[in-house]
Image (cartoon, rainbow, N blue to C red; front, top):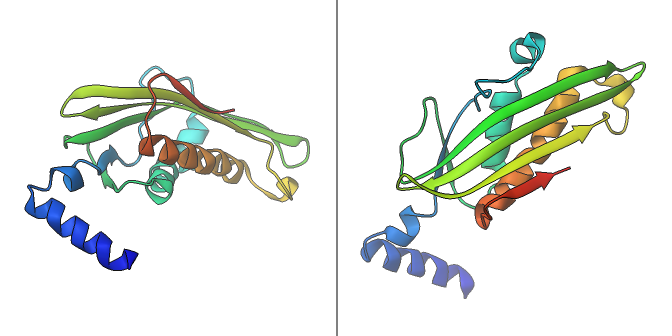
Length: 163
């Protein structure tokens, strides 16, 4: 019964002007850019794909449709997201000590809806000694992607996501 109601409901919304359906999607830039005033080591920026990974994870985990754009998006609902900091200390032998820090603002029709800051840390998890630095940083952006995806479903201004 539920499966027949959802398509019917969506069709009614589309016939009614599509505002409820169109307003649920979010555009964001991919790869997620690094903040202009960042102090992130060049090797992280050049060797690790955390900007691409973060965008893909947000899209994967979001409860609303997310459209990734190559340039700064200009749609009805836009998530302006940037990587503020990323640190890769330690190694497989001494232990990983990594974190990624982000900030984001959701806009609707150019007006700020809500913003957040997020940070996730990782020491590599199970078998961390067998993982490279970029792999461990990838773990931090995956969980941040989950955090941001959940936040998009119910944005709260001033939220602190993650660790």
